Length: 84
Image (cartoon, rainbow, N blue to C red; front, side):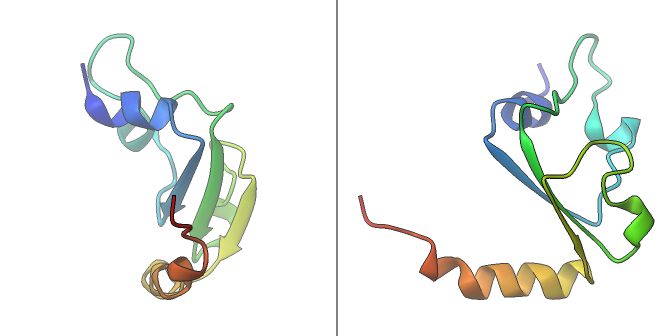
């Protein structure tokens, strides 16, 4: 079984940067393996506005350069982590 789609299909949220979720990126060559979106919520980052939500609905769409957006997420992430 392909671990990527299996992990993604059980995720609460997927952050996708620069990915259009084509058959090659949103599915698998293995028979019966595919990403189930929804119910997984997608935060879709792309520099091209028309790509956001094109193949899967996006809960949040961000028009930005993927590298810069990822750097901003990493910089802000300590503010969102809580000690358990």
